[in-house]
Image (cartoon, rainbow, N blue to C red; front, top):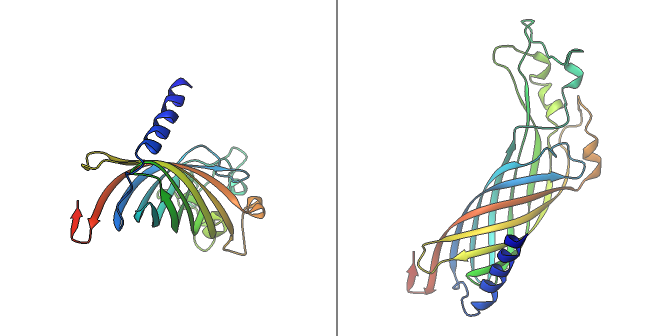
Length: 237
């Protein structure tokens, strides 16, 4: 707790002590990010963290617009959508009568635009994004034991592809070094996904789709590649 309080003090000190240290107008900040996404609420993917990658594009003097894309994937779930295919012992058998090693995971992506404001080069950043999101179960088949019940056209009945629009508010601490030695951002964001099932037929229960919006909490660390423009004739890399 003491270390956390020191971190908060450091953020506010750097935010409000650099009062003239604004990001130059017409600057471009390229973000390469990696983080975690935590599904919450009634989603069947609430099994811990989901790694994600993102790419953000910013330009501003204080205010900015951006575009970002995140690919999200996870290797575990809590809801077994293949339960109706399992034997009493919990196995799924292929057409060769061997036990098939079928693995369940989760994947999705988000792409959107955002508007926001950075207080200073070293300080807090706020944004509000609007984008498109989709997510589904990932069923990894066993190449050694073919299971026709989860092959096309039946596979999509178990994947439960959901898609729609999402709001994405966020806050973060951004550190930009004038000498380009250390440029990073630590961000916390939320995804409020207003989605529905793409397919009209489902081969497994999907009760979670009845309670949209679904919420995801994201945490990411970004490495920033800045292109500062201090005047129309000078660009610093």
